[in-house]
Length: 460
Image (cartoon, rainbow, N blue to C red; front, side):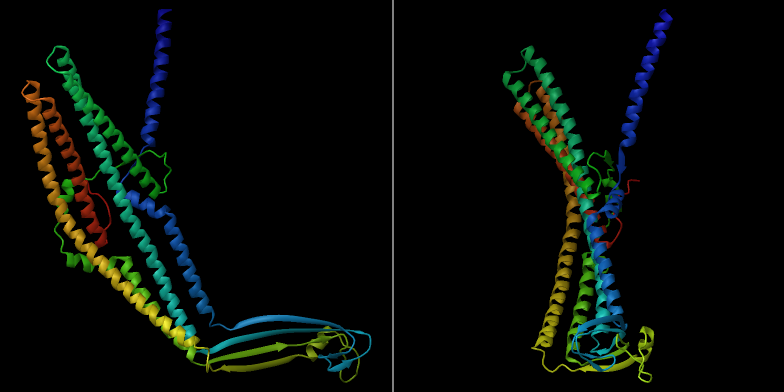
């Protein structure tokens, strides 16, 4: 009986342990590790803005196809019918129909028209649409570039908030331990009510700070998931980069060299240059309006009438016989010379020239902004490295000062105000160090962004 009960306990324990283990395993499996390169890849694959830009690119491709198709002859077929009662001239038989009688006529035909010359407007439009398609492609690249930068900012922000949240846990633990020690010392009369109140206030402050940091981390993580088009409930963990590796690999960059490389890589500049070419071609298209246009038309048709008769025998003939008998073929050319078009061509050319100046100004503005951003990024890298060194020194000093003050406090040579001031400075220095560390990484990756290098963290 005892053995049976032991076996039952063992069985239930095994079931419970297995359930807990499987649940923990499922939780571990459900957590997805996402590196910065993975985050960028998923964002570029799923982002709706990119899909919209690619659809605009497809529209530009259709415009180019239509511009090319406009060079081809048009071909159309038509059938017109006419039913009359009373006096009527039958166009098929060329006879006058009189009296109270019905007449029916049908005129099938086929026609073609082709433009032989239109001031080179069609050819220039094809060239402009080709450039516009290329501009649409660079617009896709521009959106991707902006998203890459956005992902990098959000990713490092999430990691920074997570590390600060983690550090706040250690800070809270120190405060709680100190409160417990002070409570014990208070009970034996070695600490005052003010000391206990100060310890309790420090614990409450650290708890509130930890809650705020947790919210900041979860918000930045949610923003990152939204960029990746990932469900909010997805459990992910981020890969923390090594600042030592970044400092080891990063070399001082010359702003001129970075700017020259960025000019070749940044889609903004490529798009601005293409838009200048498009604007210049629009001037050629507008000038084509001053030139004559020449069109060729070809028509083939026939007719049918209820009253159709053979011109020799005078007997009525059927549908197909009439089509064969009354068939006709015609061709003609139309020359259109613009003399005065209410200044429409003049206005079109003037607008096109203004459009070219706008495109040139936009290109210069893009270069100026890029040059300013590159120079700022190069300076920021140097400043971030120096800031990290200073923050490291400040944290080490604050840590040493806190430990020394705590030792003095424990033996009654320092008051609670001195201790908690030292702890606050130590906590602040730790947060500053975390922010400085990831600021170095971010500023270094910004240089990679301008150079056109892939954004990834090498933690080896």
